[in-house]
Length: 229
Image 1: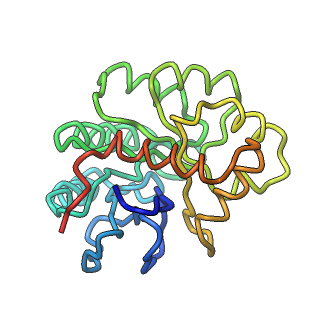
Image 2: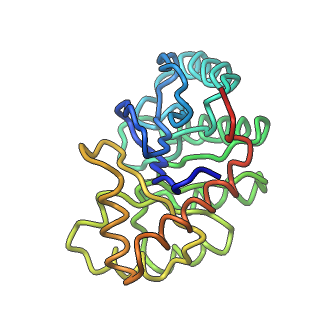
């Protein structure tokens, strides 16, 4: 185990040359990778906003699969379903399922973007019965749907939504067990430490306890990351 325990940024878009934080940077199929420093990991996936024709999508899916062979790519995604997107929803579902299957094949956790499509995500989870963890990123569902998702073993990542004056988000974050929680910066221009600080205030616990919980969560779902080069 690293000493001291680092912060974990489970989902970020800009490259961050970190020395104190373990990051998982999201890449689009075909994007390049920075040299591995021991802290900068990657996820690769085809986002529902970028869905095009089936042929074009298949080419991108091949790129995703090829990228998963790189040692410091450790997650599949972000991928998922978005009913607000202008892209074809049936094709979204096909592409999402293909990436969920890749996650099982490579034994990587899956980072999920979901907007107004929780039922469809749950349907696919029921169909595939995945062994790998599915993580809902930038999560902001209600308590009722959260209980359903929680019962299926999903995990949840929080970011800027913790800072919005929304009692529902606070209630949701207080409701979830610590062993289901991660933090992210997504496209936030700041450090993930701010998310931890806010979360510790909401839960009324020391930030050190939160760091330990997230560190244990990360190592539980991604056991092969230590020592990668």
